[in-house]
Length: 314
Image (tube, rainbow, N blue to C red; front, side):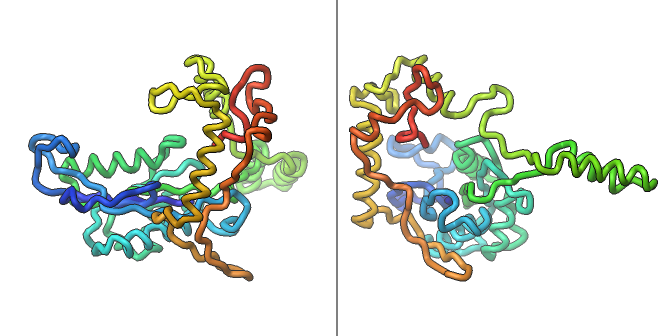
């Protein structure tokens, strides 16, 4: 999935309704004091011009042979086509991501170049867990507010179908020793160490390095701290006494309805090359279930008393 936003300092009337943020363009006008906008005295008014996103797909499905850069590129191209903005008017591009592909560590820059943006337009990538794209948006807004540029693009991308899997540290160290070894005996020692440890790769850690907890554990911890059970949901600081399972079912039902009624106008089609080329136009993770099925699911993380299950964890 990739998202991009076009943010601009411009007329507030240019803002278009959004369902999901993906690629946005930002610009500014003269300062205007109004209760309907967020401009401050002596600061430009920052507005969201347009936004798009690629379809949300489950990992290892239609996007499995693509790179994250491909998805971000598709979002950038679709955004510029929809917003009808001159590509040279963009002053900066910022994209957020969590798991980086080592070939395209600065995915914002690579995607921008592949999308046809000038090499003179700066682009950088940010990461802050699941709010990486939000950080990209605020970074572009700060650039506009400071007068650094008049228009910018904020986006984000994540592709979990191909995560970096590396050799364990012993093998990596042995490879480096082998490269520098001059004696035949030293080379044999390095090769032996590689052979003994070759089949124990390091997978990307799901848990946080400092806490050792996954997001699911943290979710259960917060639920316990705020007294949220499976019979109560706190949403935007408002206590809603509907069951969590019902809330999850409602979310999928609304998503399914929006998809069938073509209300998700921010989604842009993505061409998938290969031996069987295709064009992906819809999300494939929507699952309309029932209370009976969801209520039977056991806690996925804190087994004894947790409330987060696979049916409502994202």
